[in-house]
Structures are given as C-alpha cells and as structure tokens.
Image (tube, rainbow, N blue to C red; front, side, top):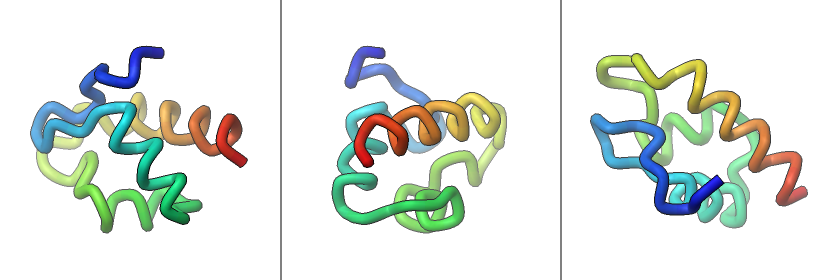
Length: 61
C-alpha cells in the first residue's frame, strides 16, 4: 500500500501518518483515534481505516 494514500479524507490521514503513530507507540484503535482523530467525523472510513491499522500493526510489531 502506498504511504501517501489517504485513508481518512476528513482529517487527511495517510498510511504514513498511521505508520508514524504505530512507530511512536500507538497499539490500539482507541489510541489511534485519540491521536489522529481518524474516523471521528463522518466515519465513512472507519472499517477500512481499522483494517489498514491492523495490517500496519502486524507489519511493524
């Protein structure tokens, strides 16, 4: 997946921003939402964003 792909359009959250959050110690969905505000506005990206986050967590363990 391209690192510049936008996952959450409301807050312009890219794959790269999620990776940085994981590298910074984020380990669960609630933490990610709190840090990046991902999927907190229109919520259209929620399920896709959760899947991307899960994949990134597995890759960066």
